[in-house]
Image (cartoon, rainbow, N blue to C red; front, side, top):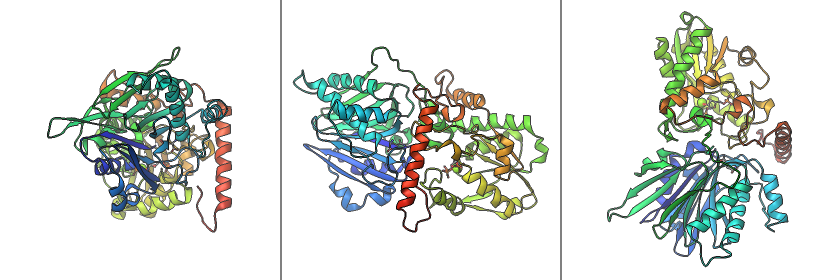
Length: 507
Ligand SMILES: O=P(O)(O)OC[C@H]1O[C@H](OP(=O)(O)OP(=O)(O)O)[C@H](O)[C@@H]1O
Ligand SMILES: NC(=O)CC[C@H](N)C(=O)O
Ligand SMILES: [Mg+2]
């Protein structure tokens, strides 16, 4: 997952974007970038690393202007370790456009092919986001052919064509030189995008777009609304704000957001598509407690423990519902980031132990129920169960707020090849054996969906739950696609292994 920010303000935006990106750091730890606009020019800086490492004072000084976009990257396409694929991306025509993308296109190969053969555009990176930007540039070029200038309506016409040509997940922000800032969300609204505003001292409105509401509110903006599926929004540098749902003929826009955002990705203090992530996680704890009650005798559990960070609200509510003591058995090292989104299995494995340290007094002789939000590769759960046992636990039960992850995610989460997903061909008991737990209990998909729906009755109906049920809502993913994807990933891994000089990490 990545995080995006876009802002049109009445004073310099570099520090504002930096602060907002820090609030989105949990969505991407591999690279960060910012592009600002000042009069006639864009200024851009991007690099590998976290926000604090990428932007030094000297870089910040060069990012001039009252409008800009920002990005934190968690790669899903192209080379994970490439600086060239850090975002934003830039094209110089028409006008000059910069773009930052959260999500993943599912027809990138076709898009590239058409871009080259018909549009005569070459993409020199493996990035789906750069391909998306070039489709937009081409369609914009086409749309302005018969007009004098770029108006919001011309931009929206181009966006309708973009929505026809690209498939998959995309929540984007961008700027067109000397004209304005824009944002758009794919026809299913798989990835989030929210609009905020703030009035300056003189009464002038300033606007901000962000992946999550926490990034707006954390820098003093007020959340206005979510961008709708298929909607494109235009915030002109002249202060004009306009939007349109850009649905091509024969297609439809409907809200089907990614369920995993609520399980793991988003920060708990964000509200996405009208639904508080924190409240959704509490509700997940309630329904998971019901599942535990139906599967085991809770008299056999002495204590409930979260696996910090993400599972905390869920575990807390679960313990309350079961009337069991809630204890912090693992202390999190605050200087280690999220392990799931780190590249390389060796790094992830090592980082789990660096990140979480057991408190032996909480484990000795006890039957513990460990609660995590999800088990994906099983990296965390395997290490955690071992740590619990090393610390003297008697029995170790493991509950997951998400159902078993059995299928790859193709919409912006690097959920890997099927064979790397610990549950892809296993029953919960077999997963239990793999992670050496006495029992593993997974939430049912229906219960998870109902838990998220219960937060804002009637608002969210359907979810992208493809990693749990294998149903890909864009309708273009079949077994052959997944096989080809895995083949590509394996080849990329083999190439990266070959390039390694004495390193021990997979990329
Ligand atoms: O089965 P796995 O492949 O290990 O993936 C699942 C784990 O990874 C995530 O934690 P992470 O450390 O990324 O972040 P957190 O601190 O937000 O929980 C998630 O919360 C699970 O704990
Ligand atoms: N996780 C994401 O949103 C990734 C964005 C884009 N597909 C990339 O690889 O850079
Ligand atoms: Mg975790």
